[in-house]
Amino acid sequence: MINEENSTVIEGRNAVREAFTSGRDVEKLFVQDGLSDGPVKSIVREAKKHDTIIKFVKKDRLDQLSQTGAHQGVIAYVAAYNYGTMEDIFALAEKKGEAPFILLLDGIEDPHNLGAIIRTANLAGAHGVIVPKNRAVGLTATVAKTSAGALNYTPVVKVTNLVRTMEELKKRGMWFVCADMDGEVMYKLSLTGPMGLVIGNEGSGVSRLVKEACDMTAAIPMKGDIDSLNASVAAGVLAFEIVRQRMS
Image (tube, rainbow, N blue to C red):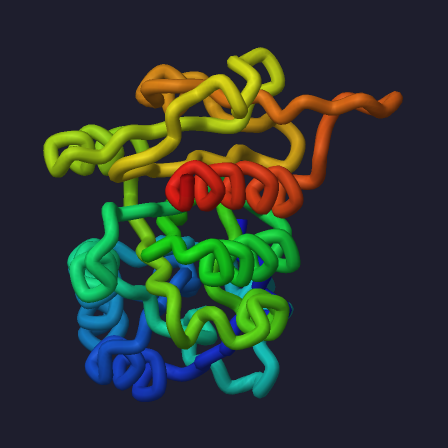
């Protein structure tokens, strides 16, 4: 899910093509169904090359999305900030002389939650945040504002498959812990060393396959009458438990 209202909207063939050429992070491309001329084919080819989500829709849908009325059959939603790379994360950890500490977000859909988590990640000394390409909010203007400037310092990496990414990171020495109310109380876990903290969707939590890819599950002890925390609050509690253990 992409919060289109808070993304930068680019309309028209030349403008969309230039967005790809200039290296902008295009989150989603809408193309009028049935258009297959040279310029449109070229734009679609660029979108596939950059692993952009492509939606073929009716002209009526494009007219609804258009802010100018001159979309020429293509509209793109562009991230408010460019995404980083995995190497950016490891380079930052190496520069600080620290074991890598990464937050992985499994389907966070609320831009305020994402922005708050990125802010928390920065304050907790995490070296980066990883988000999935599909079924999650991207780097919208609301995310940037809520992060309170943290996006300028903390790399956010977008990946196609979280489980595959975790398996690749395990080969680089990473361990993974996910937030889950049925897990071990977080104080009983060893959360030092190269660590990835996985936070799940606001409603359904961490997905089954992602949870199975984790090495540990951590529960936050709660004494109230309700049984769950907001995703960004849970991220903060667990992130700073990792900070506490790293400082011990």
